[in-house]
Image: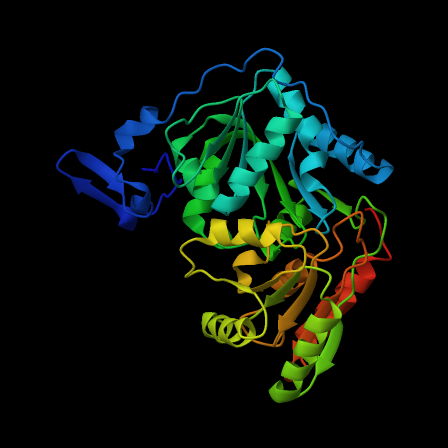
Length: 382
């Protein structure tokens, strides 16, 4: 007995109802009888010329090398594309996507967060002008079929055995990381191979590389050729750190500034204090209108955003400078700190950026993250 949706085979999770057996492990996605395997969405063939794509800017030599290597290996095995934040991971998989579409093979781009799904689907439509790009996420589930489907990882449950190529963006991030149900659903949605895109691969992905079941490609250089901004560390009591923060805000008044904080309570407190001095935005998991907040902040040329880890990935603010308050806090991990630092220096017009880690005490983790970014600047491609 095996669940056709999440792959669960543990007997304790199966329950026999009045109409037959169903799996309780993935019941959060709706009850599905084991006999209902054929009830998944049936997708139509790929439209003609959907594989044609154009890019606004050509790939760099390093990007081109990574793109070709990925294009070659994805035909026979899974690929882990480990590229620093802002390296252009999406652009480097376009050729692999085009190959699949040309051969009438369905492609899905799965992402953790709804906002990124909507933004990426618009970008891909610019690249693949003749293809039908469909975004499937909360509030966008009326149309489920297209040449290229962009969805949240939770929406993959609709597509059992439908995709020949699955691209999983940020698989080391919440909610996909460590979620056995989502892992199983993703595996059963793809009948071909998977491209994993991340700057911070977790132990699960690296174990697959070590086993030899996954090709590992590394790129540590952004398209503009500049080094990654290395965080500056300040280790003082909180009262002194706050004055350092105010000075940093004033010194970077010409650019958008994102201040990452470890808790929602801190975000609200900072929002209240700073809003008495200047206009600022607050974005946390409790913000009901996050999409609107992010959109409005992007319109500002020198605004201030106070955010929790909800903005550590997927959101690009041109020319943004980054500060992490209490970077030594236990809620921040290695991947999160590197991702937050990676929000800076992504723009061609402002490639340097500034990253500030404010710490109330010295920790090995913060120092390690700084050293890891420095090491990445010395090794371009693997």
